[in-house]
Length: 258
Image 1 (cartoon, rainbow, N blue to C red):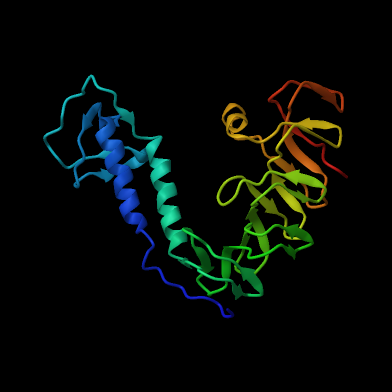
Image 2: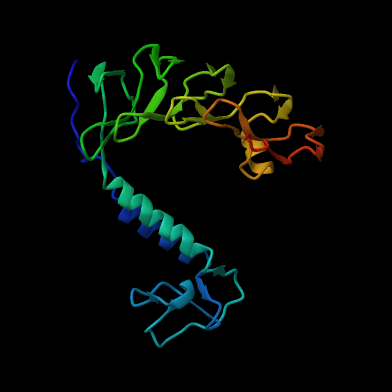
């Protein structure tokens, strides 16, 4: 079926509701603690954000400090700002389910199942799963891989349906919204997670998994420069390179090329 596809937002959950739930969850978990004022209070709609990210209240009946755990407010504020940013981004895209093979902007998209194809505000395709094996930007992608495009139609990321060779590197693929790969504007691989420890240009790079992401503080992905050379990865074991010693879990950054 040809055509661009609709842009129906009827099933899109309002992010303001999600944000409200986040606030209520945080508050009910132990209240909001204003470290400057030295009190903890239950949620009150009259509260406003004051200087430095702390909360000030126009409510006069402030509850005394409780012995139960109280969440500090300052670490919460960046999360709320992130949620607001996500809300603004969502307003710029629309989405719809695809129930059959559909050609959109030259891409043959497949059935999205319980997920949604997304579209930019301009109507151009933002993301969808491939209906069949497809070659794009010099890469051979396997069917059911979700591709992501910017507003100009340039491929910038994907969720691989299976492990896939990209620029001679085997990148981990576990399906939709699992381990992502990204691409430079010239089409070369920018980053990916590898399934097993791999020596890249003489550097033992760690594999990507839930455990290595947690233990390695989110640094288990392998980064490549726009010319395809290794840029950065986390050490899978001890090694020495360019006169410097690295222990397992250290981050290795390739020297700048002149």
